[in-house]
Image 1 (tube, rainbow, N blue to C red):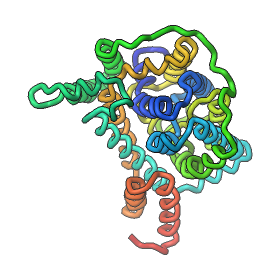
Image 2 (cartoon, rainbow, N blue to C red; image 1 turned 90 degrees about the horizontal axis):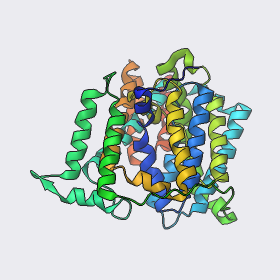
Image 3 (cartoon, helix red, strand yellow; image 1 turned 120 degrees about the vertical axis):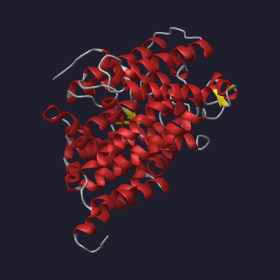
Length: 392
């Protein structure tokens, strides 16, 4: 196992914050999910995943569950989110331990590329949104909207911050001397601290297990509203595409990154999320692309970022969310944009018109509906093309 601690690993470690931070903030601030429980399980999952797989391994919120919960926060309680974590933990653990998840080997490569194209596009679009303007008031500190209201040469100070971060990353991404993402994140924290100046209070504590138990109604609602739409995306992006991308990046070093292992580790992580009242978690090809693009090459990446979240939970408790509020969403948007572009380049190994057709159809379905439906439709379309029942 390779474990290095250097500037590039530190830069890669924070390369995926563009996905993690916005969704974590959303379910914590809008849905009432425990910040200490979320930070604690994120930190533990990062460290254990890195030590087991031996290569950079992302930890992300389950996007269908968290995005739906944020968009419908008046209807989705914290208990429903914890119930979603419990359901996903049980299902993924059973799929991994039983070996049923190995049926994923029959997923055509064009479908895997369709998942990666869809995720990459969504990351870029969300990144552009964050680069242009901050989310709604009440979701982020007021200083970010104040930046958006200040005009310099006809362009808002918020957008100038986005542009500066983007240009810096584009010119330094391939530098071995400058840890690009690390520099941008630190600069973002400095700007946020100078303008926001939050009250960061040390409140050392351990997250309380089973502090909130979902009701029977929340368990049933979570199964149909959150879990069933999430499951196809998890299999497609966090298991099938994750293994393929890890093997592409790290070769034999990623021999432990298997469908069964990924399903099992995510199952255990979500049982932990339920136990400590955290948000549902997964791996994901988009997160891996982000870590890799910004410099991560060893499991040291996981230990660095995992330790950060673990210490934040243990030292600041439920005040840890104030740390995330320091980051301007303009900076997070740039990270999302770059990570999405990196993931979309995976299409370069497709050769035929038929192979390209499947990802394009999947992209349309992803944008019109969600990645779960796109994954199912992609499998059906690829099989029909293979059997020559459909010609393109």
